[in-house]
Length: 73
Image (cartoon, helix red, strand yellow):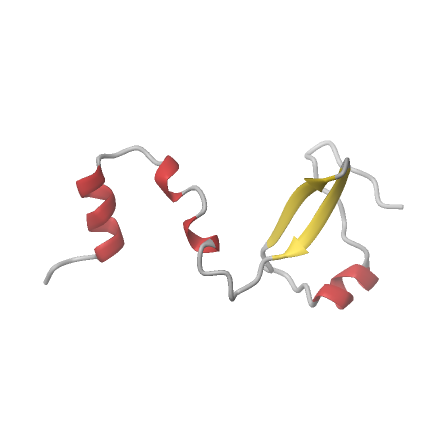
């Protein structure tokens, strides 16, 4: 059974990494379901995943829209 380090890190067992197709750099999500922690590989098909937390940044709407749209050149 893996143990939590003082930095809050844990090694995902090889069998789990292989079953989920996890490789270094893979994005994962932790959720709590029915009192248990669930690890999920982030799906590339989820169009909203790249925007999670985006609006939690400082700045006015014009700045945020400019960053999203890029340069008008």
